[in-house]
Length: 365
Ligand code: FAD
Ligand code: UDP
Image (cartoon, rainbow, N blue to C red; front, top):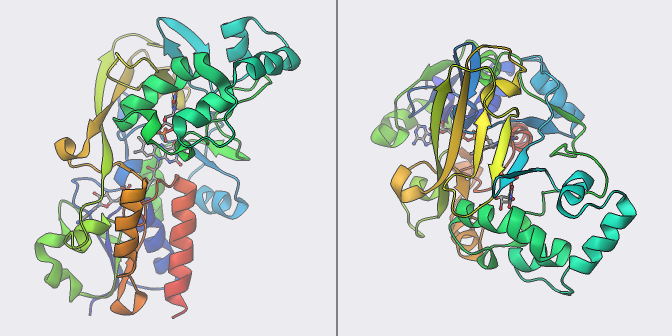
């Protein structure tokens, strides 16, 4: 056998796993079905601007070990994600903080804001879904201006059908702070994610434009272990049914102007506007270029795009996933990891933690 690990998928999980294996003198081959490596973290340089091809990627973590690990491969700038919300032509500070509440209601102090929001909140003891949870936290006005339309577009269903966990990560603050995240460390790799990941897998063979399933037996014979980071239902030939995914379409526009919107991201929360946000890439890098590139992000059906960006962790899918999970075990020489194979909407730091933990487990066997 030529390789210790055949890694299916060159996304962040595959690259971290390959990097750790290389450090332990293991031989790896990475297979990637797209024409480029690095999965959804992929960035490319255009007009001297790093384009986040698959949506805005902001690295953030609370974990010292993970922060030290990624910094080996790139320096990071001090970008802080502070999106704004556009609703009926008005712009609002976001995530919801004292400035948003001032813009909405004129309140000026934390005390005034808390009093007002207490009047707005619904008294629901045991909220059963995303809508009820939001109403019990912020009331109707904020729910309809900031959450309802965006969520309905993003998930293509009424928020009543969704679990509250989807929005629990959004902060509600009674002080002035627009930082989207609570984590200790945050930033963007200064020369783009593609460069960071290329350094991670330096010296490792990568075969692009190759779907593992087209010659599965051929690849399996070449290695001791398969590290599989694609969709789990596909791996098991949909034996227990198909998992649902939510997808996206990205449409970019170039302008011969310095600044299109004055911020990295503006969320469009109205239901009638088909996209959820507009990204202006140069703002992730404080770039002073005379041109600019923006990308509009349109939620889409998986069946139309065949790109599974988001798992949909509802009861039905979690049940199917758990059936597949029973089929996984390390003895049958496969390791399953990453956002698709674990069917969890993991941030990048969680992906790194998972790859580290799975590598440690298999290397101690
Ligand atoms: P992927 O990046 O999906 O990589 C899997 C790879 O496997 C793909 O390249 C795929 O082509 C390949 N593959 C699949 N099947 C096969 C096959 N049969 N044969 C060969 N190759 C195959 N995280 C953050 O921390 N911060 C953010 O700001 C952030 N923003 C995001 C915004 C959007 C719009 C999206 C979609 C995600 C965002 N994320 C963010 C999450 C981040 O993208 C993921 O955590 C990370 O990219 C997952 O890495 P992965 O390797 O598991 O998956
Ligand atoms: N959300 C919203 N309004 C916004 C931004 C987000 O209602 O302006 C909701 C929406 O349901 C979304 C969830 O919060 O799916 C999580 O948002 P986040 O920005 O964390 O999603 P991501 O960038 O990962 O898609």
